[in-house]
Structure formats: C-alpha cells, structure tokens
Amino acid sequence: KSMTVRPKNYDWPEFYDHLIDLMRHSFSPKTVFGRFLATDRLLAKAMNVVRSCSSEGYFRLQYHKKLRGLMDTDRPLRNYMEQETDVVPEFYTRKIINSLGEFSQFLPEGALEHDQNAYMKKTDASIEIKIPAE
Image (cartoon, rainbow, N blue to C red; front, side, top):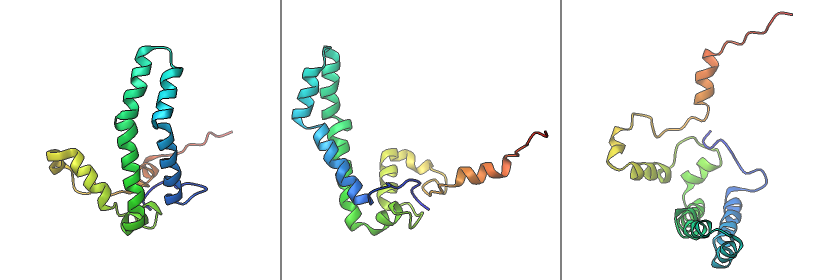
C-alpha cells in the first residue's frame, strides 16, 4: 500500500525531525560561509551561496517542516506514509494540481491514484522466463 519505502530505524516524524535538523545545519549561515571559504573557484563559491538561499536550501527546508507538522494533524497523510492506505492524501494531490496549473484539467482519470505494484502487475503478465536446458 501507498509509499514504497519506510525508514528502517525511525518512524516518519522522527525521521523528518532528523532531516530538518540536518538541513538547518547544512544551510545555516555559518556552514554556508565555511563552504564559501573552503572553495577556491569564485563560480563554485557563488553557486554554493545561491543554492543555500534558493529552493534547494531555504524552500526545501520549509517544505519538510510543513510536511512534518502535517504528520501530527493530517491523519490521511500519516496513514499514507505508514502504508495503511494507498489513497493519495489531499496534500499531495493539491500540490500536483497547483504545480500543473491550468494543465491539470488534462490529467486522465486515475492519474492521481497510486498503485506501487502497477509496474510489477503489468510486467508479470508479459514476461516469459525461459530456462535453458542443460
């Protein structure tokens, strides 16, 4: 059901707590400045700073913080993450529709549903395994 992976040694909230802590450290001004000083080439220095201030740094951290907060309040989202349901939660469907904008109207029926075994179901029926005779 639902998500195809789960953290091995943590539950989802604890995993995201660690992820957020790691990202806060990685994109803190002190760490960004340290990378800036440790890099020789000016272009690489500039790219490191830009990445930390852009969607790769700040905005991704905000996204993970929002998702972590929803784990405590949005039961359908948590059920999906815990593989208790394969119904894609509104958080993800809304994100997809917003990202597509006016093009979301062209999504085919069932496009926002999830079957993590769809590939296996499709290929299992069409694969014929031939074992060579000895």
